[in-house]
Image (cartoon, rainbow over all chains, first blue to last red; front, side, top):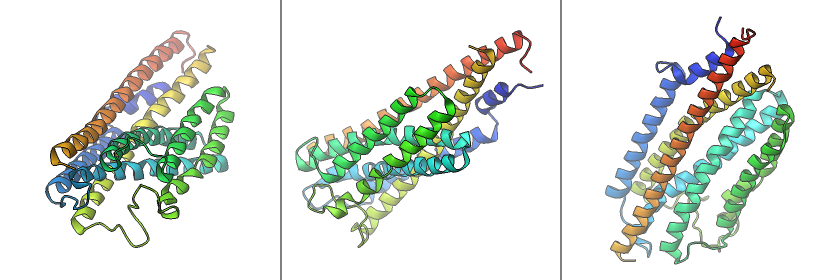
Length: 243
Length: 53
């Protein structure tokens, strides 16, 4: 009879397994979409006529990465609500995976944003409303892992983390709407009430990159969920061994 | 901004994304390998003790 831990290992060990194959297809589709987005951004979309000039090309990855980071925090929020309602560990795993990826994407946003800020505004960082609220979100979600590291009991850790993820999510809509609520800031509005303000070819490049980045997030989320399942299996084995 | 200077910023930004994603994937691969190894070890120990089924 196969033990449960062997079943968990199979998630990664079985090359022809449906989950791994699906994840590979999603990541490949993400790669194709992102490559297409780059091609359109650099060879089809016109160079920005403002003072930004060619440096505006950073936008085609920077903005989709930022939207994906906020999407990840949204997924973590939904997972937290579902965990508190159903107390099913799979929602806790989903929350952990989403927050981890949200932080990865957030770091990329801060780095690319800083480089673009230097090109556009002449400074690496400005205490603009969008930048500041985004930084606060990053610090809050980094705190999510600090909190998880301080609680031993699995059930209590998952409950506290879910509550924290719900509270931390309050900053996400504030970040998203910061440029609309405080239009005097440096950061431009990407998607406003009057649309994107982008030319058709710019918008196509942005949307293709956005689709690619979302697919990348889904693919990486599946990998993270597999890792969390393995981690839980290891905890279970340690418990059974009494160590 | 002159094109030559803008190109440097654009290249730096895209390189940062590439390096960041590769670093993340390497880190994820290492986590998977470590967890698989640990699960195997604990599973074998459990079976050795005779209560693994």
